[in-house]
Length: 430
Image (cartoon, rainbow, N blue to C red):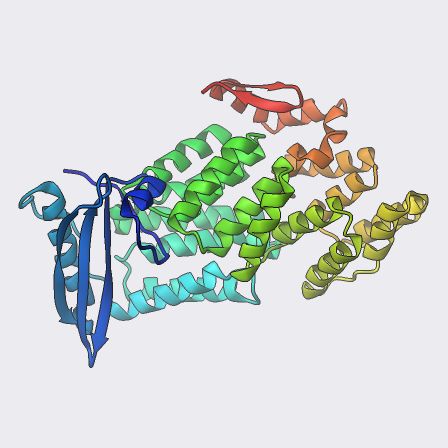
């Protein structure tokens, strides 16, 4: 028998039938872990998601030093209970080096909080150390490849260099530990996304989200890919699937908030931005999209403060921000604002995504198109999904918009996926 596993990093209890329906699973394993003086006790119960009837319950005991052996015994017990009897021995790999595993977990914590300080760089160091300690342990390769792939977005690192390093890392990881092969689809999906190989990106994301062990990050990245080709409704659906697995994740809540913002549902966007901020979400795209929601509500002062604070943290000058937000409230100051944007762009102190949206908000569509043409270069000069949001409706009427999408191979993707451009949006066959 084969089982698909969804790891949920949140405490749930109560109506197990409802929980099973939300997670789209047939059974639920829940329990608690108790530790005293190095002795571990795992109390568990397996519940049938159809009627909340307990299938099996018990406990597994061991020592903290034998954590992986204890995990294996629990996994075997659970599988036997679900299969209705003893099953063939689980296909497993040797337990990883314990120190390597602990260092890997430190890397994951830093990676999940990559928007703070130098956490992204710290995560790379932890993953590399974990791999050095146990080269046969696959998860650190996944973490390292993810961190390397994100460096261009977060640190402006060379796109082609770090995407190549990410692929080299994950290929080495799969060779060392074939158990991570399906999960590696998320890395390939992200890299192919950056290379505008949309169909290959989607194929690999589908592999990752349908893996035996599903991670929320794969759903979040797939959501971003779908939004980048204009499939905003599908992007929201995929982000919500990530929420079922990791409802308290900062990346997940940020992704949902942004997607609601792209769809123009500001009430839901604000709700998820509050949740994401509660869990310390960060990143310039997160701040930019939340700022956009404040602008829509007419809260220009709050939007300006939020934008200034985020850019100041990056150590960049903010002299151009006040003229831009003043022009949003007083169109007579538009020329002054565009001049400030021109200067900031020439001095390379404003990133393309902010420059693009700044031009859009000021009605400088030609200037916005000049920046959008940067998307033809390696990686994503800025989030391609911004071209499909409500504020860029006038931009989409530019005669160069559709030729740009053709050069970005988005139109080819639509044709292959059974989608078409109609009524200023993407429509796809079910």
